[in-house]
Image (tube, rainbow, N blue to C red; front, side):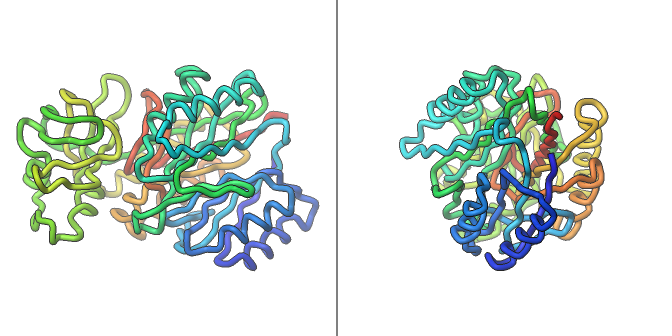
Length: 380
C-alpha cells in the first residue's frame, strides 16, 4: 500500500495537492481527513468524492501531517488500499444508543471480514466513547483492534462533526472497518502525565459525574493539591487549567492509569463531570503539570510498538488530545517529530477532544491528555 499525506488551507490548495499526488499514477481509494470547522469541508469532500475516494473525516482542534502543527487547515492521508480490504460505515445516534449503533456496525463488518479491525471517529459532546467500544467488543471480541478519537471544533467546545461521502453529522460515528487478515493495524495510547501524592478514594460518583474524593468536593480537593487559585465561576480559565495540568488519574488493576480531567463544574456542590466514567469506590491520584518526560514517554511507547508488534508500516494516523498542545505549546512539534521518525512513513493527525484505544497492558477505553498512534500496513 502506498500512502501520501497532503495539507492545505483552502479547497483550492487541497485540489492542487491532490492533483500533484496523483500525477505519477497514484490512485488513492481512501482518504483519512482531519479538517478544521473553519474550512469548507463540503467542498473538500466533493473533490475527493469526484475522484472516487472513500472518506473518513473528523473536524478538529488542530491538524498536522508532519511535526508542524496547523490551525484552520485540512490534513489528509491518502491511501491506495485495495477496496476489498476495507469498508467505511457511518451511523447517527440521535437516541444516544451508542452501544447499539456500534454493535450494528460491528455486525456488518463481521459479516464482511472474518477478523475486522476498526478506526473510529465520533462527534457530539455527550457521546460515550466507551459504550461505542463495548459495542464493537460485543461482536468482534475483547481483543479487537479499535482506535480513534473524538472530533474537535477549534477549541470552542460547542459542536463537533464527523463525515464521509455525502454525509455529515454532529451526533454520529464514522468508522473504517479493515480486513485484518489483509491489513495489519496496531496502535498504542500513551499519556505520560506523572502522578503525585497518595491514592485517594472516589467516595461519591455517578457515571462520569464525580462528587467527592475522600469525602471532599472534588473541585476543592483538586484545587488544594494543584495549588489552584481563583476557584470561582468568574474564572474562565479554571477548567482549562484543571483539565490540562491537574487531571485525575483513574488507577487500574490492569494496565496504565486512565486520565479523567474535569470538564464541567457543577457549582451547586463543587462537583465536576469528567471525560469518561469514574466508578464510585475507585482509586485516583492527581497529576503534576507536564514536562519533557511526557513527550519522551509517548515516543518510547511508539518505538516499543515497532520493536515488539509492528516492525514495518505503510502509514501512521495520530489522535492527540487538544489538552496536550495546550500544556506543551510549541514543544508539541518535538513529540510529533519523534513519533514520525519511528517508521518515517506518511502521517496525518488531529488534536482531538478524546482518544479511543488500548492503554499499555490495558483494555479498550476512552482517554484524555493522551496520544493514540495507529500504524497501518497492507499485506501483499
